[in-house]
Length: 189
Image 1: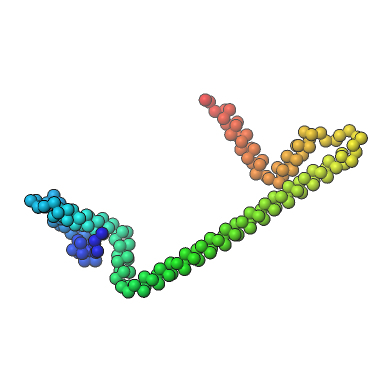
Image 2: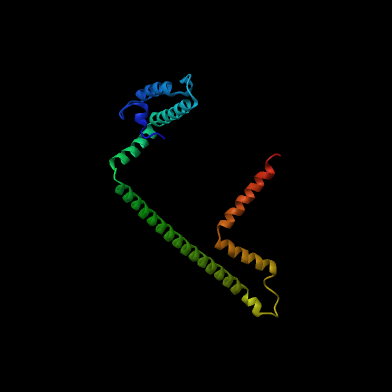
């Protein structure tokens, strides 16, 4: 990469896009390797390198966004020629990186705490549901002589209903699956 794109094209920093284009065409004709007739290979290679620099300069300076970014980079280098300002910038970047790492660590810890709390709440809901079902079937267990009030199928249904009450999204999923199944059977093959 050339040291300064404006110098490569021979234009001023305030040059308009038309001036950039004119300068590029002029420099491209001067430096194009095919225009170097009756010269050695070394001269052609040097011309090719200069032509690449001219082309890179034009690509950057003809695009307003790239030109603005290039100007910002080169102005910051020119305005802070002493190396200490770059060291300070690097120290600022290091400090910013450390802050971001600390934030990410704290966010990870908070997420883990939330997951533990959610898992605890889920286990508590399950335990409550099991206690309710046990309370419903406890009288039957105490009367072993009597006819069973709840058979296995009813017990499974009761447990499933309790789980559905604890997880309302199950019912929404079931209804969506039934709608999809109905559409699939109605749709022609």
